[in-house]
Length: 185
Image (cartoon, rainbow, N blue to C red; front, side, top):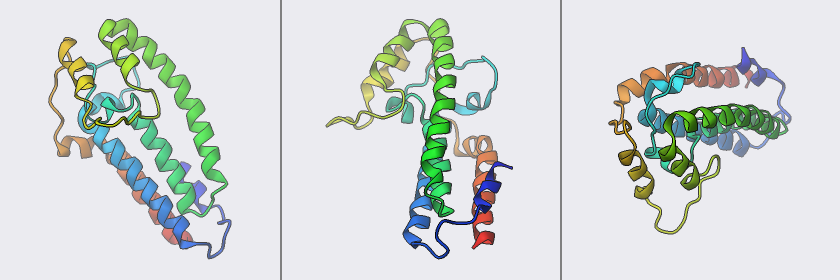
């Protein structure tokens, strides 16, 4: 189990509590970003095939093209900090960045082939990893309008019930991770 890494002895026996709180906050923020993303993209986020849904350019996808992967990086980094293993945090970032970069390149090629010009415009406007927050960029309505112009892309947000159902595995893993940290303490 990947979360068993949390049982590695902490760098600080009683270390600064701020590290644990910072890590927990990063885990919550990462999962919050994932929940927001899954609410907009739905179950297609769980596929391991080349099956595609419509172009989604709303919610977090209006700010960054890969919010679920960014959320995962935040989750793992947060758990490293919460476990008081700060040396592990940059290692997680590097490993996941390398892995996700390869996955994203494949996904972008597939999406460009299948969705064409609307997706190319989306690529030009929305950054891959780090959002560009400019003055006045509230909901980035211009990016949402991409979805309205590209058939068939207009789809309502999923319900919170559907979102939580889709994220149940991640939520259980987070609960298990915090349980391991509690047992470790």
